[in-house]
Image (cartoon, rainbow, N blue to C red; front, side, top):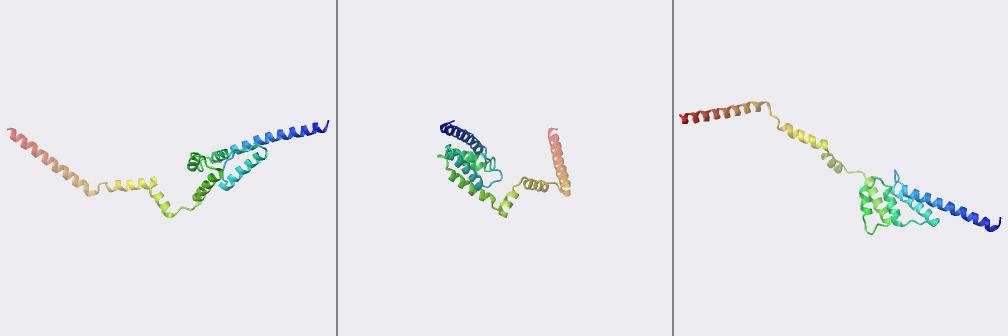
Length: 171
């Protein structure tokens, strides 16, 4: 075996490892999910995987990084993901990360009591309670029954008198 043969063997071994490593890194990048990670750490992991791919001559276009980043969110940032994907031209990785970090900070802020009160007042239970209160306010009171019967009696007497008057005029 010559030195050239050894060198070619090492080169082939390195190339084989490089290709399998590139496929593994690409798969890791495509399947990364945010889970409980912060946006900062999640984006850092994506950039590290991208740099490792670039180091083995497999650079990843920035547009793909943005898409992989968004695909890994699941429902966590669903509203913002849609906005980022529909920007033309597509946002850079850093622009998208910046938007997401602002949203993450906003979501982590404690809600004010007025916001909680506003949400509470429009909750289905509160609305139903309001309907029940209105419904109860239209329920007859004990004295109302007598009045309705009297009203009905007055109407009945009026109707009977009209009937008699009409019969009397026919005679």
